[in-house]
Image (cartoon, rainbow, N blue to C red; front, side):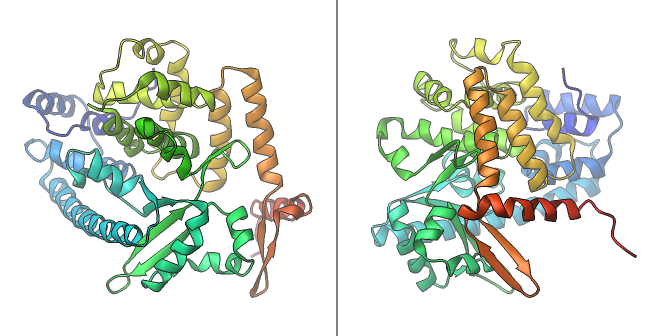
Length: 389
């Protein structure tokens, strides 16, 4: 069994919506037996977006330092206000899209907070993510620009390549709307969802809309892709999202498992489900329990959990390697393992590049990927060379 630090163990114990007297006694007993580094508890709580749960569990326990409770309380007030503003802004955005006959689906963040969490303030949200149809992407962007949204600076060079190139190269664009002083609302507008990479599997809004009776299950597929595949369950709020999306919901489990199996991501889902059971005691159907309790799944689930002790999520380069390694470990068929390896290599070679030459940025299309591969490799190597003093 994976061994967690006392601070992470304490944080996991504090994951509860309404702490019972028994839970408070359990936390108090743990503190009496185990010294705790409160600064590290706070660092981990912020990193995993668990401060609202931690505050709810601890504020009535006398053994907790008052200064720590005050810090948590202030953090929770800020995040709750931020959530309310983002929820209000999302509703305005959704109304704008609906008024202009743009079919859309909210993803992650504020959508999960409002629809599945018992209290939206428990789910700290970042960007507002919206999925639209590919054919509506540019109409949506122009509509947002007409309503004071601006494109992210990093994407302006790409914008010069034309609509066809953007739709082919990218799967989303980021826009922001100034709000107050230096604050702004961030929108990630998606027209495609990638699973691992564009050569492995990709999905669009039509995937959810095609079968309304299993739309909820297909949204869970999206959640597993983003949280489990692309972000390797590396933050505990990903596990919480999965738990609240499943808890007391009428899930078509046979369809969901078959759909995940179809794309070779069933074991990744089960690894997340394993932690939903161990952290939240999520009840499962009798047909699913043996899958989560299997001896083969436990090592995979623990590999994902090893990322939780870090003070920060993985950097992109490290994350890409973890994505490939863990997805490879999750495969039970040789053919699927070969697909993971093949698509990983092809996605790293055949990709567009943006290079900086002096004060200018130069765009290279993915068709030149074999040539730019050597330039990209050289740039990566220079990061490891000692700098001159």
